[in-house]
Image 1 (spheres, rainbow, N blue to C red):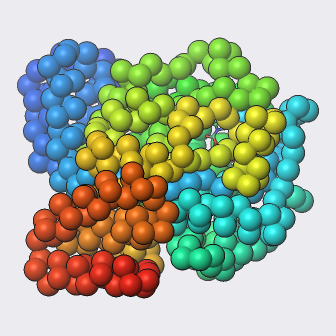
Image 2: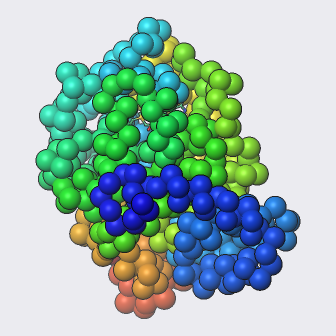
Length: 472
Ligand code: SAM
């Protein structure tokens, strides 16, 4: 039944294969020789199969866990350096016809204030985001054929890319909207989106159907096969994820890696990113009703093992996570975080919306983008506002080959420094400016290729003279 390259959801995410994997992991989690072989494979950056990863997740001994963390740190450093890509979500509309029992947008929720941004309101939100320093957005919307049809999403993307306010520009728009048709994915690609993101929520079909009792999202196969359609529609950067807390973490962790394996085996390119959201309190939702909450220590292990299982896949956490857990997760493999986020529709211009029942969920990190940037620099990470790869056509397997070739130090590092310089000159507070300056000075000298280094220095001088938007 299990068929990694099948286009049928229940064959590439086979329930029997997941259950066999979990039994295998339990049986072998004390097999020292096997664990050592898997750790060696991970250390050699060869990635892990879902079975190997599930086995590591089952290991409870301190020494193995420490080794996993150490390898995750090494891989993170090797492929991503200390760059952290910054983004913000932009909520367009919370109208939704679905019945997802964990999401406050569910159609029966009578207390949430429904709102959909007009193109003028989107303009205002984007100007507020540009004034913070953001260059990369993740568009979010409920599913509603009348209020939020694809035409509306495409019109909004065009609006967002067209806004040039002072030195601001949104250079990459990622899109997190409901599963759709191949034709609609083609239209999204033609509109110039970055990554198409869709969370599976849970891979357990039976539980999925219980959690999504009504609406188009209740169709497990249609939802699970969405990334296949996106790829057929020409989108080669896709982002997957599960909402941890809905199902046992072991099941969804295994399903997530099987999904990544399926995309890699079928299309020659795995997911561009993996998101690891955890369920949060929200209007009309009580997290106590869900019995699968993932404790911090297990969550850290999950992130570290995903890091070593798919070394070439970016990993994202949002402001659902607190400052404390973000600090830990950044070390263990996260390469992209949001900052200064609002989860309400219109919340960047009207922050009061956050507390007036239009937010999607309660966020745990309420700091401004400038505070997050300063904090990252204090922790020796480089906040990066880079959007170069996708604009230079380095998507899908072309992006993966850049990562695999180890050319990051000559490409992504200078891009990160140049975009941080833009942030420093245009948006940073005086205190954060000083930190940006010190980081740029320190790391510019570490760009290995002499010619690239000299060009990066020139770009930085030009930014001081008022020019913008350089890239390698
Ligand atoms: N409507 C789109 C869909 O159906 O996939 C996606 C947009 S929704 C704004 C983005 C994600 O928020 C969902 O996929 C879900 O995983 C997450 N989400 C929903 N309720 C949540 C909650 N209470 N806490 C944390 N995340 C939640």
